[in-house]
Image (tube, rainbow, N blue to C red; front, side):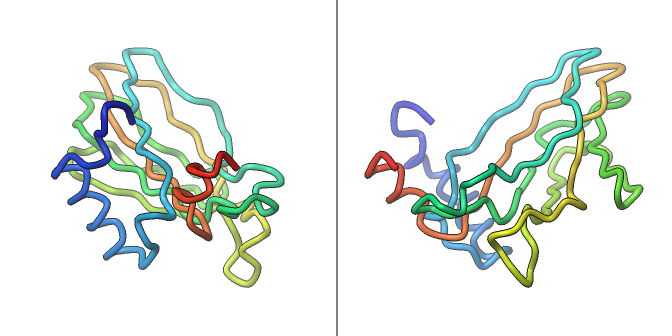
Length: 144
């Protein structure tokens, strides 16, 4: 986020909604990552957990909140192989998944590997919010 967008009333409202739904304080969130996929664009299978992040002051990413900011004419689904599940992009839809295990939030939950399937027709717009175990904002301010 640049130019103080974190204080924009719309952004503040979205953070409050995420906090209400997840129970994770806003200060534990990274800045939103805005995404745009054109026709034939995709993102290969990956995990949102960052190795060794459990050793950092903000701790590991515990949840991903993915907000679909557009409908897509065809394609652009988010696919979770382990669950054999596909989430179709739809304006206003939100998908939330864990990066860590409930029983040990320092360990990666390998079941949530996922990919952004190719957009076949149209464009896909979305936003990620990655929520950490501890205060990520303070850790960033301290340059940790």
